[in-house]
Image (cartoon, rainbow, N blue to C red):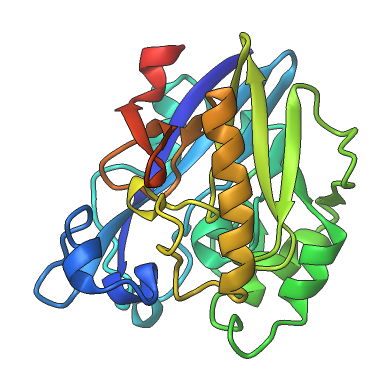
Length: 280
């Protein structure tokens, strides 16, 4: 098995929304905002080469949204999904599986693209199966008013219409060397992959833990649909992560790619930060 960091780009979100009820004077210590109170966030994916399978976990915001949509998110940086794949010697056609932790636009927007004359949509990864789960698919395709703006039908419905959609069951027999934690605080049935790699457990954190700045328990995003459930899910996970020395792969952290956590008198806190490359 080989692992590769895939950077798909950076965007900006309101710092207050990202940290919920936590005061700015506290969260700005780790994530300083600009003059508009916006913080920069990564959209970091992970590529897993396992035998004859090339598995891409999430794929960023994509490039098919119009300027009116994108102007709210201030896309920036000189990296993108396809260049990042190319840097590791791969193309979109090489991907065999697209694992979607959940279907918010910044996680799955790269799944679908315009065709050549922009008359219809087509799959970005033409040789891949796209993996979600039944509960989350229903949640995303029949969205509540709170999340409706994050579940964009053009990112989601073409996958099923084109016959590319598959569902992961909770016991997960579809992927070797990957265990899946299902969590419901951020959105219903979000999947958190735990990758078993050379005696280590590397956890793709998605939106259960967006950044090192979110490690203290009260630091919960305003975007979460069930923040009290997030508190419980995050607390249980961080205890296990500290107990078992998990490596946390951070999808949205603008500064840190990976980290570990440790037990302290104040609860579980950040231990070390490092790049994925340093531990491979």
